[in-house]
Each structure stands twice: as structure tokens, then as C-alpha cells.
Length: 259
Image 1 (tube, one colour):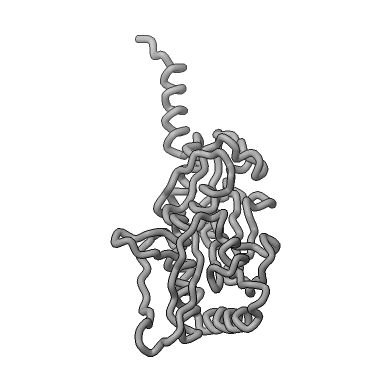
Image 2: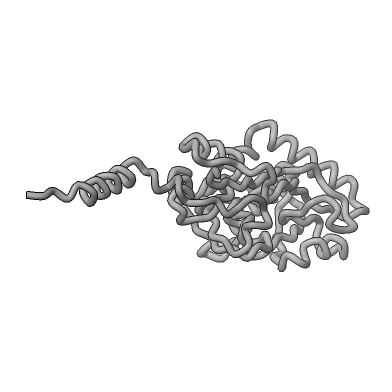
């Protein structure tokens, strides 16, 4: 009886090829810089800052959300996504999970976000800066970042508002800009920047009243004197206003397959 050795060897090789995961290493990389993301499928951590950053970056990409860094790494290796965009901590976890992945030298973004105050209100600017510094030093700002940028929109904190505060500051904030600011199911504005504004006002001993506006009006509200300050991914140089110290540095790395 003749044994067909060649088909048997081919079948054995294919089984080994699949079991050892060699197929993932054969998926070619297509992304070498931020400009190459155009038209690609990009993986992000669900509910993270990266998801919001990619969505509003102006890039024409297809966003695929994942619940953890291991899934992001797996889908990048398998070719289900062309690249992953992630913050520094998530990037570290992804790169540790596989030696076949690398971080591009040029990130998708590296921004310092500030609060905008009217040019005539140096006193308020000083007070806001003092509040931000206190929230940084006591660990509250770090807690806020972990809560809102960790992949879930479920953070709640104790906010004091009532008769003890006799003054109210009006704050302009963008609409539907999760996880920075968006409406909860009971129509309350929540999110990282909404909570930060509440905490700053709490530090200042005042109540807060939000003016929810479109993003293109966020600086106009301060410049025209309609609000006391604005918050909403504002970077220095955006308008004729005073800028607070940075409350968040957003570095969004691009992770790709090697080769």
C-alpha cells in the first residue's frame, strides 16, 4: 500500500503552524506614523481617553473597542486591527504581553489640557491653579484619572454643595464628549472634566453651575464673559484667554506589529 507522504507532511506542518501561533507573525504591518491611520481599523480600550481621542482626532478610522490590554494585543497580532492607540500605562501592558509589538516614535497626540479664564480675572486664575495643585498633591487628580480613563464610565465621588457655599461659579463645558463630559441617564453632566470642575469649585468653597455648549463655543463663553471659566480639552494658544496650569497630560501612543 502506498502512503502519500507529501500531503501528510503538509497537513502536519499546517497544524504546527496554527498551534504555535506562527500565523500572527505573518500579518504585515501597515502603519508607520499617525498619517497612516487614515482608513485603518484602530483598537482602543473601551471607555478610555484613547477612544475619545481617536474619535475626535479628525482621522478617518474605524474604531474597534476592547475591554482589556490583552485583547488589544491579541487582536493586533491577529490582524483584526491595524494599530492600537493607548495611553502610557496601557502601552506598557500591551508591550509586555508580546515581543512582536512595538510603539511608534511619534504618538498620535501629546497635549497638556488647561482651564481657560478671562484675561481680566487673574485672581480667579490664581485660585484655580492653587486648587489644581492641591488636587494633584493629595492624590485626588490621580484617582479621578484612574476612574474615568480606566475603561468604565462608573465613577462617583462625594461632592459638597449647599448652604455653606454662598457663591456660584458658572463653567462652560462641552456636550457629549465622553469620558470627559457627557450626560448620564438622569440627564446630569458627568465625566472627568465635569468632576474636576466640581472638585475645583469645592476647593474654592463655591457652587458650580454648568453651561453645556458645543466645543466650538467653549472659549467664546469665557472671552465674552458669559462664564467664569471653561474646561474642555483646551490647550494653550487656543484663544485670547488666561490659561491655568495643566491638569492632564495626554500622550496617546500608536502600537503596531513589528516588521
